[in-house]
Image (tube, rainbow, N blue to C red; front, side, top):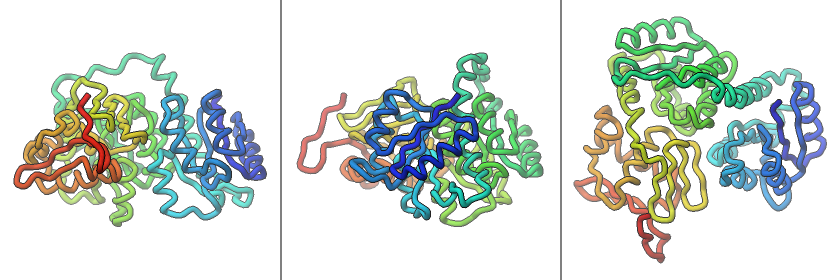
Length: 389
């Protein structure tokens, strides 16, 4: 049975969560501050953590979360951050960037709310993912994929609209792809674990759990976090697109799809990239950057980043494998995007990559006029350049 740790300095609310979890048949423990929560986590390794964002004491909620995600023994434990009665969008962004699997407010999970089904569905989705781990160990070996990716790419379509699923299935099968479908988010998470797709096409508006939560869950587990995700949705706002990128999506199409030819060209490019990374599982550049290509994580100094889109991850790997070399835009368009974008897109993605890496990256990347980009992780300004290891 999954064990859940609640880290909250409000004993009344902690007791409420304990009663709620017990009613769902779940074992829970309550720790009143971040330091005790960290020590308990290392000793007991709970299945899931519910963390108060406004903790009092030596460690704030954000500091506790970053500490959990920076240590190998605890970083894979999913964390649901629970903020005050009204959480801000800025708090949610900070929590997500620090590694939270989900961000909710105490106003959404309280005795005053008669219908707490949203929170229960999120818990079930996380626990379902946890329970699938032994299933993957016990189950049969993954299916052997034929060598010609374009003829055998496996595409998982998660959409509750039967007409959209039928249309996409017809188009993709006509192009020679194997199509797997799911009409709910939780079913999609199960099939992503069991069917070994090469690409996920994901609707944002699903009847059980939000598509962004499905995206977050796919990026939370080692076996699925490198899967390219193409979002398909009726939402066309700038905020929706920014959230899609934050949650790890690789590309974004609005409904109805304006150009099926362009749509399929992206699918083909994603499928061709799945074996692009070479066999080196860990790439080290200097003493500041470590990339684990199998776990799809990177360490920048003392900070661990677990959520990055597959496209940005491939781009970083290209630079990391050839530190100090100048990589031309045309080379990057071919090697990272398989010629599916234009050269000016490279500049945009380098900017996004620097944003993920943080301020230290300002010293790492150099634009070489008329040639391309060069990356060389160096010590902070005033320091010395480390040698490559």
